[in-house]
Image 1 (tube, rainbow, N blue to C red):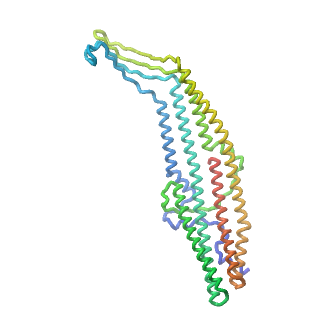
Image 2: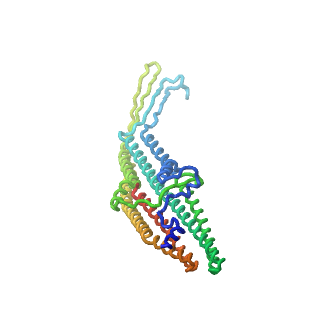
Image 3: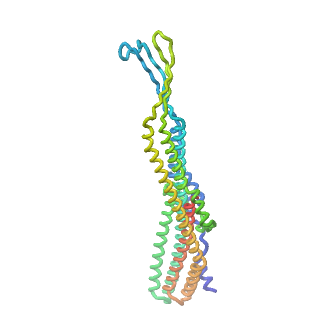
Length: 416
């Protein structure tokens, strides 16, 4: 059992559960951010969400425009002038106001169409929010994975340094060949290079998370969290049914369908034109002032022919949107299933690492490390086992990351 104790001391941390990220905490004096913190910051600060909010405001303003009446017209008519533009001595004049009034229901239909466009803008904003939430989750877990890889590679660098020191001591005592020391130095240089690359990956992961939260990429940031996330508890059928209700694409097409139906109604209403109502004061020299009321109603002689095109266009758009809805439902079901299967496969991979790969890699390396310390084997066997162990540890971190991102993809596909 001595080799097990020696291996555990030398490989402190190997095979332990992935710890909360601590490397990033050293880069910022502010408290480290959790995943929920990152999601809240993105929801409050991201430029794309703010842009979507402005588009909703613009759509809301169009509702008021659609409800507005046309501007009235002030009319002045000067008759019986002795000379052109001689208003003072005109014998008769009219001063009044004219208001155009649409056919009853026209203005309400326009407002209803604008409200559907506002609902469409809101659905688009929800779509942006869901995609951004996925991107933040992926970037957050990407930073955790980068920090975890750096931690493992730093431990590996320290192990190699210990191996190099042992090899140099044994060379000085005449217990090993010089090639062992040369190989150890090569491994030490390679391990140091890998640590540098992992540190650069951590910096890029921090920048990516900042960008996904809508912040400058160089903003100091530290995170805390765990790559391990709870597995799925919902069935595939439940997720697919929920997606068909909550996905913004479905709601957006539903609002677009309602708007086209209203446009068809508007086109049919346009067959009946509006009318104009005017009231004016009438002055005639030598007579008392009187009032004139005018009602102008266009004769809808050619309106039916002019409305055929808009009605046909709206009806064709309705059919097109219904086909898009049919396709979107099928595509969403497939998207949810693909994300669900990916999450299940990632979970199986994690279980394989936890139950077999990590334990066997640790045991094999521990045995060879003990044999090397006792002078029973050379460094080549130990180097091979160390590489296997490092690959297993990094593969485990990748499996945890893949599972976390797959679950985030399920959330996005389900419209949550």
